[in-house]
Image (cartoon, rainbow, N blue to C red):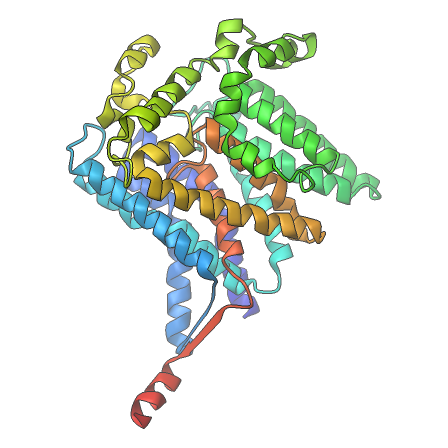
Length: 433
């Protein structure tokens, strides 16, 4: 089993870097090839597992009900693809829809396999995850600074634009997650000066990269999680999940207060862009959020099961905003994973997302309380919870969604709910009948 575990873990470590390269292929050359390449490591993990099952003639699955709820959420995502296809959208076609539908749940299933092969060694997986995300960051830095590549989906002149990732601002999310994990490792290595020093150097260098990307909302959420983590408040804040879920209404009502805070000299230096209109509208995002909220309160077209992938386009929520931003309407999005899922997949899809996020949040909160190695993921879950309200980082096949799939996969593997099915036993039972 050790050799098999080594193969699986190697594929897991390279999975995030390959995911990133796949997105560059998707944006630069061919979307279908790019999607498949981004999922290549996950495909290999699943194929390896299936071959191993055939060899051992035994299927061993240890999952709880969260596994099946996650599958339901993915089915809701797939349904949204086909609802959109049925409306003949200009941004998709039959081949792309079938490709996305075919690979959308592969990362989650692959992560379940990774967990099965690492049963009893989940602390090892925390390091492997950190290493994998770090390698993704490294290849992006090499791509930008050495090869001169930029993100082909979205980039802004003069700012760090990571080429091997799904979007410009996703780079900020990646660095924030690595640094949140580094906070944990810095605390852990406080008595080891050498390890503490190079981890601190890594942390500080990443702060420079965050500054170079300058995603203000991601930076603010990272700062919030950083403060909560340093002072060990994260797991003690009982209403934190509720605050995260209702972050957009809070932001819409606290715009002026936030501007006063960001006007302080320190934040002006860090954020670079501090303008009252820009800050209070969150660079125009509040206009988009309000359109989606108006749809929820007053329109409610297809509110139960949703309007399909990029449902806001079919509802024509943003044609005038697209003109203001000087982009095609097909290139717009709601700047919120939660609102996008609500519009695309309806109340059903949104409640499924809320449920799986809550269960993963509580799972890692428990691990953090018990001082388990997996507790390193709890502040990352808090970051994902907050950022998914105000960014597309956790939407569909995005990097944040893939990371969330990993967290949910680990939470879906519990010792108390195991199913052991042997082909030999099944044959004996059939003969006895």
